Image (tube, rainbow, N blue to C red; front, side):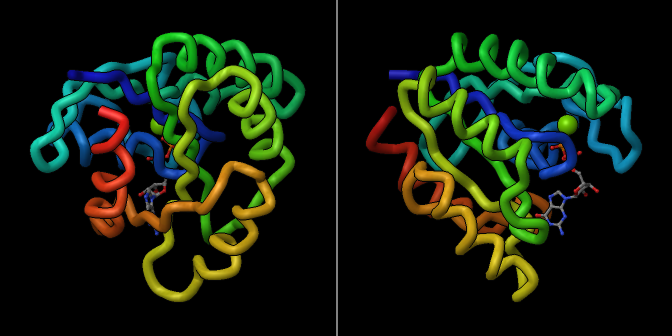
Length: 163
Ligand code: GDP
Ligand code: MG
């Protein structure tokens, strides 16, 4: 059976980098600049023998602090509604932010399955952020490095039983 995975989380945590790695083609824009990617983007992902649809939530990059929360909520709820599984990404180098807490709350209420991932976890700079992630109450965080391809076998192991 195939499934749909939505990658959600605040801007700049590495969602599009992970999307591109899973899809294997540069379908989503990755940029350091705000305002580059928009809305929801869909691709066909491949991870080991799993094939699934993946949704990248963008479109929050150009929001101001004032408008971010409302847009985040709308867009995340749309993505959650389309998804069988949500991959909630935080930045292990930054740790848990107030915006991350808002996402966690939406996901706890609306998502069927949530996998929590702490991205940018390569090296030691991500260790404290990874530990902080437990405080979100979404179970054990998965340590990922979307840029370096670390944590993909562990992601596979979490997705395979849900597929
Ligand atoms: P998005 O806004 O959540 O889609 O984040 P992007 O995928 O656009 O990535 C934002 C920035 O984080 C870019 O500069 C990426 O190169 C960088 N980035 C993404 N994944 C990693 C990672 O695993 N480690 C590190 N150190 N940087 C990453
Ligand atoms: Mg993006």
